[in-house]
Length: 487
Image (cartoon, rainbow, N blue to C red; front, side):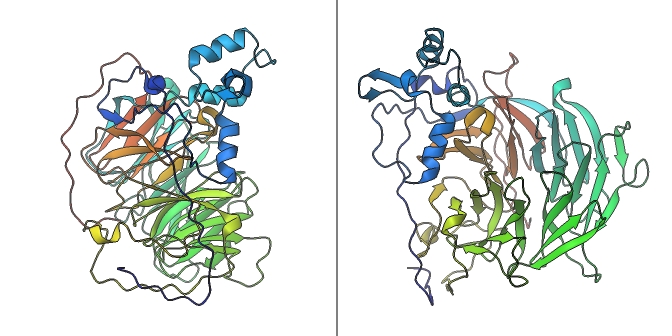
């Protein structure tokens, strides 16, 4: 064992076994791109699917009606082919005369955005952020060279706004579009979050020259720190941020003032997000290896979280909420994604201290081989996904869209210049997209279309689709990984 754990209380080990994925041969029909897709056919249902409520919720969201999947009495076929789904709908096998939302997800989720890629833009600096708007009509890409570009997806990816960031330190670390898509906030390694009017007529937005970029000051005491993560609340009235001074900040846009500061962790807060539409719950992840849940309705004591979730062995780089106030995923420098149920959280942290017998820094070193199989003895996560590489920068992961996939998949960028897509229930890697020459920090799946856009440190922003737009995809590029000090 390469880590020695000291603890003061016993916490139930929440590990769950993973299983193999059932994949139909036609699952990725029509793909001809430079990527590798898992294509094994498993007609018999695996015995060890994720034994948790979320597996049933996922099946309800993305599974066909039982009458559509029934072959013989007592025997079912999953997944059901698109041809059979359409034939059964015409014959009204389900008794509804139409597809349900879950039926639609079952059909759409089989056609992953793995064809291509096709070029969207090419820049001379590293891309750090890729985000679709909530309705998919806009796409935001942020680059190290102070550029933030907003593309109009419905108008042939025309540049809608070309923003030159203010007070740039190192890079634009994060951006967030308001729910009404009228404003964008961006963060850098400074205690000021800037907000831009996206709806203005001017395409060029140079900070305080062509347009005003209002600053939201998060530090009342002139303390200098950087912002790693920033997110709008669902109703657009607040912004939450995670910082390098180990704190969470909530800024009230209507009152134009800082409304809350929490000394949340013992190290950098790399990611924060609201748990659901209510805005009461906030999730945070930190370099102290912990994920925490904060309930703003019942702060019994200042700085005290509603609960703590342990399981990662290294710092947390990103969090994504399922949007239901119950489940979220986290990416970590221990080279894994974990799925969490906040009902498993503990009221406080067991004292877990480990002593490495080696030196390691993710910013310029590879992950030690001897650490890959080490497991946290009090892992409270309900599932773990491995295969991608989390090195050099704060790489992000997400649930796939609810509308088109029923959130059936988890996808992430990777230091090895690939995009990985995992099945949430089985844990199987179902697709690996290859094109870029360097680290992919961020990627984004369109909320309704089978389209995924990735951006990389090679400066390319490209889109992956199914079945594509008829254009020839880009030729493969030779991978080039730079080994330098990055955030």
